[in-house]
Length: 259
Image: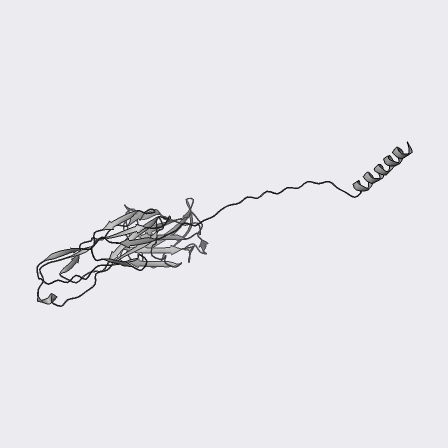
C-alpha cells in the first residue's frame, strides 16, 4: 500500500507539471491559385510559285525575277498565302504598291480577313500588262505586297482631335469639347457623361434645330463629325451654326462656334 500510494502521488505530481502553462489551440491554412497565360500571336507568309523563296522567319516571300523578252501582252501570277500562327485571332490587311503603266496588279484592293489559329487566306497577287512599246524597253521595277496582321476585333483608326476642336471643311464640321465656352447665357458649363449635342441653323426659315447629334462619353467629352444637321433641317452657312448642350432634356448651355 505504501508503494502504491507513493506511486499515485508521484503520478499526480507528474501530470500537474505537464499541464502547467499550456493553452490548447488549432490552426489550418488554405490557398487559392489562379494560373494566367497569354496566348501567342503571329502570322506567316508563303507561296506555291516555283522558285519563290521564303525568308525572314516566314515573314518574306521573294518571287523569281520576271524577265520579259517579248512585247506581247501577258500576265504573271504571284499568289501568296497568309497564315495565322498564334492562338490570338488576327485581322489581315493587305496593301500593294502601284506598278508603272502599262503594268497593273491583278489583285484588287482586298477586304480585311479574320483568321483563327492555323487558318489561311490565299491572295491572287500578280501582274498583267498590255502590249509593250519602246518606252518600256529596259524598264525595271519592284512590285510589293504588304500584309499587316493585327489583333482581330481591335479597331485601329486615326487619332482623335484634341479638346477643344472646332473645324469646318466645306460642309463637314468637327467638334470635340468637354465644356461650353462663352455660354450665351453667361458663365460656363462642364459637359457631363450622357449629355447631348444639338445644333441650330440661325439663317434658315424652316426647321432649324437638329437634336441629339452626339452624346458625351464617360469622360464627359462630346465628339461629333458631320454636316451639323439632321433632315429636314438644312446645312447652316459658315458662322451661323449654334450649338446647344442638353442634359436629360434640360438646356445646359448654348454657344456659337466660328463654323
